[in-house]
Length: 356
Ligand code: NAI
Ligand code: MG
Image (cartoon, rainbow, N blue to C red; front, side, top):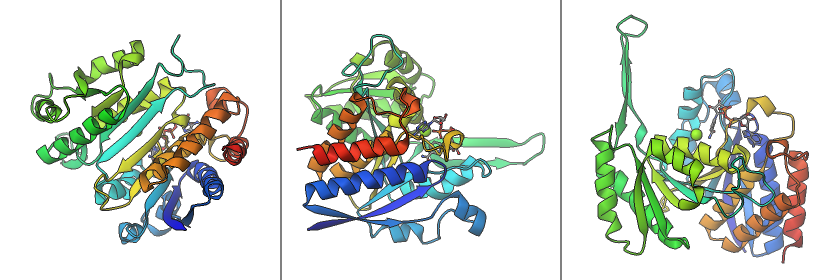
């Protein structure tokens, strides 16, 4: 029997709550399928470890993770630790260390979920946002000088490389090509940012020549927010920089009903390293410990993980279960239901067992 080694890093806030739910669903799937096993190793990395030992993960943390087929990640961030420390102390070292340059964020309105836009329901909003995940505005370049003095300066330098832009553009065109509508929108801000962003546009043009069957267009990021709200039906696959796609995908999650249903996959398309799968949301201190975190984003990213490791049937079974349970109205309060995390998880596991 095939066995996949999964590193589970629940980390902070509701992370442990949704990862526990995800592990239950994945175990039910492996049992239902019968042809593969999932072997989970749990790591207690995160803000508690930082407070205890001064680092969110051990120095050889990424080295340890190399032995796994995939990483199943919760959320990192605590009210009493600065956010830039938690992000740069755990999540970004994994994404960047493993060159997970494609961040893939599917969004669609699930049946039974009341989305906030009038007259927009399931089928009207079905997108995949591809976020460049290795450079751009989050390359970590920049610095501060004259700290605390009146003349203090801080710079945040966006870095765009031909290699980095070309590979994400190819990934996005390929993904668009694999979807029924073969439609791609390339987002930039190449009117105001006239160097790196103009290079994006030029590289999009070049790469598009290899994908004659993909219809594509360009949008400026500010106009893109309007289009997402006013004509969600006109979009399908979207590619944007690290920062722009970060923001657009939160908007996408909200337009689909809740951040609690939005998943993300940090992929190394060349499979040199394990890829990492996580819900888009953060550690949500406001609801931590209440047992009401929506586990759907975590189920969805678990489906992305199964697909990536080569268990597409199980991935589809999981998404069928998610759609059934949402349509049946078993939902957490963030999407208008009155079920808790465990109720939704039990319903998902039942649906998996009952799926044929
Ligand atoms: P957040 O995503 O944690 O929460 C935003 C709002 O959405 C809150 O009202 C929360 O209750 C709600 N929400 C989020 N996930 C939900 C779920 N599964 N079910 C129901 N409601 C849900 O974002 P926020 O408040 O900006 O950040 C909190 C912490 O999380 C910060 O420390 C931040 O740095 C960190 N963060 C970590 C991320 C990661 O690990 N990938 C991503 C985003 C934020
Ligand atoms: Mg974000």
